[in-house]
Image (cartoon, rainbow, N blue to C red; front, side, top):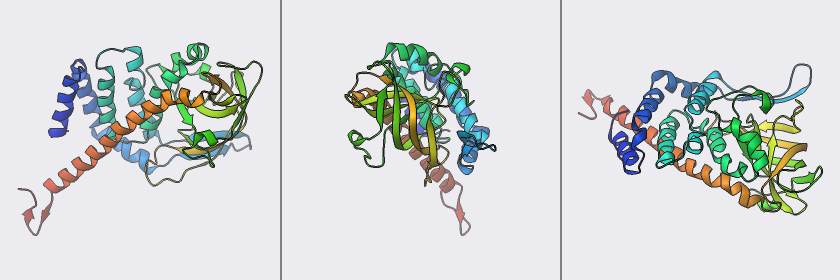
Length: 317
């Protein structure tokens, strides 16, 4: 929309060496401000995601299903490369341009920004192991969106989530009790079997998750996929979705791990340091999207006041 906020964003983009992206940002902002896309945001929030733990034959599927509007918003963001272009096309102002685009899209609906942010932020952590990075980064950095629930090798694009919090630990992740036992050799890039639980697993339909678990040498970071390479489902058992006051378009779940396969990322016992490579970037996006929500609320309030009348008079001439 028009107004001082739009001017401030344009000035900020130019000031912070991202003026080269202004035309693209205006086009993306126009798309996000269209009636169609705004309606997607309303529908994604009105129709909450639903958890289906089993199919009609009683087989475990652990599947969360979303309203089509949610997938439309995800496709808009991922096809624009908001998760990947700072990594595939780095340079002066790249993060500034991305922040501006996320600020525009975040005003439509904030829930889908969670898997967008986590996928973007996972890249530095995944690079902690060259073999895992070589296997996963092509799909993570693909400029597209593939919502199919199937093994990563059969998908055109991938999303990454995160699971740290446990019931007894909260923010104290060093109190985590989830265990990870090596299936052979120890160390970064090696497969482990994870047993335990996570009190929060955001965006549970992501293709893989960065998780913390207690390895023999201490708390370590692992990449845990939804599917195994042989086409079988990994042993992630979704227990329920959180009943939230807001941000309802994004599913947040509780999960149990019953010997789930996970590859260690980074040095054993250095899991917090490894996953903080991801967490720090997610917090940056929290700032951007909080500002987007405030701008949305302000613009709605101003619009309402400007078009309101009472007792036969316009409130704002």
